[in-house]
Image (cartoon, rainbow, N blue to C red; front, side, top):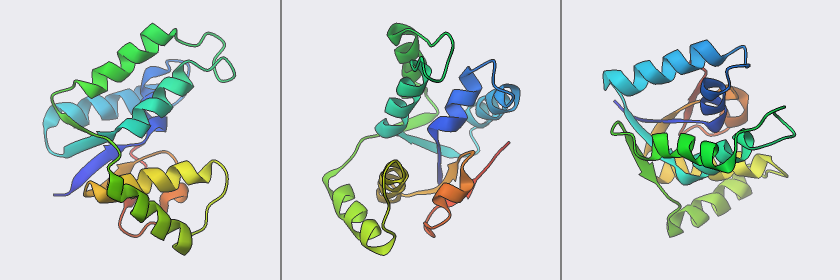
Length: 146
């Protein structure tokens, strides 16, 4: 059994009751975090992305306050079933190598950085709604759980 992680989009859907994916995303996360069948690791980048989306007035008619959004992030940062990891210096070298192999532009760079960070921490599966965004990274199985 490998180590898995969640992409921020899945977390956003689990907390956005207006999203059509809300019920399925929430159920999937609750089941995954409670059954203990997988080792879960979340990196800081995912929490920053979650915070940014939940507080965005461009994305939500009534975005969360910064306090509410950070409380949501703290739920994951302190959850007993989740390991949390930050960027480590060697991740920069992985990013450099991946950019040479698969040049990325604009916002796609952040997917590459996430993939590199997950690779460094031994994560082999990423649960995401954007499977195609991670299909180039053969070391990472991108899976849409919904």
